[in-house]
Amino acid sequence: MNTTIIDIHSHLPAHPEQISRMLFSARKNMLKYVFVSTLSLGTEHCVEFPAKGEVAAANKHTFKYCEKYPDILKGYVYLNPCLNWKDELMKWVKHPAFTGIKLWISLKDDTGSPDICIPVLQAASELQVPVLIHSFYRSSENKRGELDPSELVSLARSSPGTDIIMAHLGGNWEKGCQAVKSAKNISVDISGFPAYRGSVEYAIKICGSSRVLFGADVPCRTFQSQIAKVYMSETTENIRAHIMSLNALRLYKTVFERI
Amino acid sequence: MARNMKKSSEHIIKRISPVHSVTIDYFAFCGTYPFGMPGHFSLARLAKELSIMNVSMAYVSDIGSFFKKNVVSANKIFLEKCRKFNCKCIRPVPVIDLSMPDFESEICHYIENYNLKAIRIAPNYHGYRLKAKCKRLADILNAYKIMLLIAKEIEDSRFQASCLGVKPLLINDLVPLFEAGFNSKVILNNFQFVEFKDYISDIPDNFYFDSTAFEKGFGELETFVEKHGVNRLVYGSHIPFLYAGAIMHNLHMSLLRVSKVSKIFKGIAGNA
Image (cartoon, rainbow over all chains, first blue to last red; front, side, top):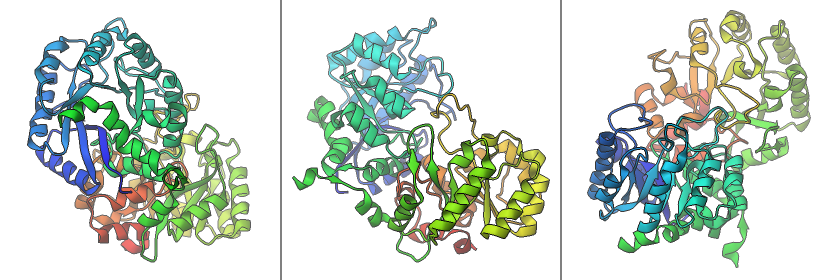
């Protein structure tokens, strides 16, 4: 349990007090870095299709705290591909804490097509940074702009030079891992669902241990409940180390070269 | 070479297991989950994991009693298996289907024949509304001083097999319970307190939350303890759906003091 831990998927709460507690917990749980994005400020529920101003405020919040805690926090730029996202991306790419792009559930246009995300993926490829994308197979219908893992695979094929991370093992993890197994530019993170027995072993078996990354999805979850998934899984110490940090060090190579 | 040997998580679980004398788990299962992982989980395997985790006693139900058409039969087979297995740390808890017209006699049968101490209900899995059953349920539980465990869901319903269509148990359905005059203890399995905030300001003295769902929001555990004290919280592992030790680790590495975490593990008696 002496592994270095890099959390590649968490979020910053809006309130400073919550952020302090989050960082206290991160340090207690021995996290070296926490990669964060902000999806919304000032509302209890995040806006599914945020306006330009909301996205800008969210990213400002992220990088303000990355500057305050540079030893532990690194930031994603959160984008809404339905809007003019380029300006927002370019505003932050030079920031020393910039790690990549975060996309959530505003990923389809009015016709239901996710192709609006392709230019974003291509921009990430040019910048050589990964794109972390929320993706769920739900038992019921997905949200309007939410990608399921099969849609994510189509996008990944249209931009093969982009490193994509499918968050949450795709929700229904058995189905999600199967969906992305042949898309080699998609890695998966284990964040955001209870510590279901077998989930980590299954991701390793289907996707390969080099494509599985650790994420906690704080504040939707706790650091320690997500760490427990990896600690309690039946695998080798070597694979645990890869999931906890070594795969992130490789995938975010250009970012770590700057740190 | 040794670094690459496949290692069981047993050594990690042992390291985080509580060292104090009593640990009670109010949310554990065995049997077969028909829709994927964890698949089949035997009583022997459960007993082994409970032992590794230093659990003194677990209130265990059969997974099949959530899904089988004949719940009564599933319960009887499970209780017989437990009797034969004779493991002191496993306390079998039948899942009672309150839509059956004579559920009271089923409970009485278990009390007389199996020294029953608790029942579990899962109205959303068995397809009835709790409201209509509250009075009868309160009468029999009060008469026999039986503990009631209420399961919200046994798998995150967002990701269950689509054909199941089970929705999480609504808090709205539980509200009549708070007014039904229960004297017996009630354990809420896998509920988040945040779901209750619009319905109750204080938790009735005989109601307890298990710790399973408190990993669903950062700071929920600590906020709950700040507002309501540690006495309203007990330990639930959600084994075998969750990794053995996962909820234990969640409690140990939370921002709560060790003394408070110990109280949670000790269960209702420890909290009295």
